[in-house]
Image 1: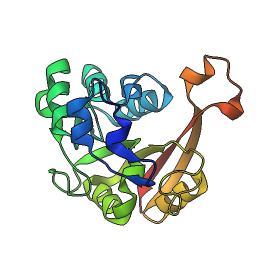
Image 2: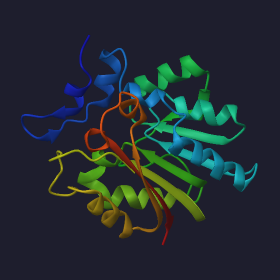
Image 3: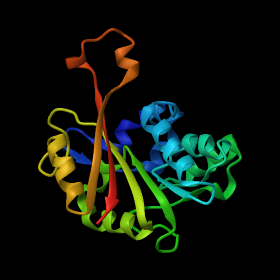
Length: 215
């Protein structure tokens, strides 16, 4: 079975290939961590949505197979997932029975939703793949947000990443967000799967989650 990383990254050439459709089509499971949707960043979003009330709407961009959308729908939350790979959407619909709750959508090309549609927009693990059109992508996020809406975005930082000329630290990440949003809070989480092995914190991967409002 093919390794999905080879569809996404050209490590030798230090570039992002971004063949997400090929990865989902040819690989048994893409980003297995996407199935772990009960960590703090997901629980926090559920809390935010429930505090907003029954009529609040959420868009999860880069939804993959729709694991998080399935959790949200089961919680009685009005949520729609957008995923660039049609195969992921097809498999997710089959797996969870989500129907139109999971749709094909590309943030760079534009999401098929009216302006100011959502109270919360989430973007988990996708930021790296937007660096070549970052301003346009963040503008599309803002277009989707209702006045006063919340944008929750996460990114994991690794040493010398592809795209280091644009983002080479969490400070860079926050700096780019501040150009488009009012950054309210940031949370740095150590990946619990690595913590469970007893690895020292300095050796554990991290994930920064940032909570923003549109300016």
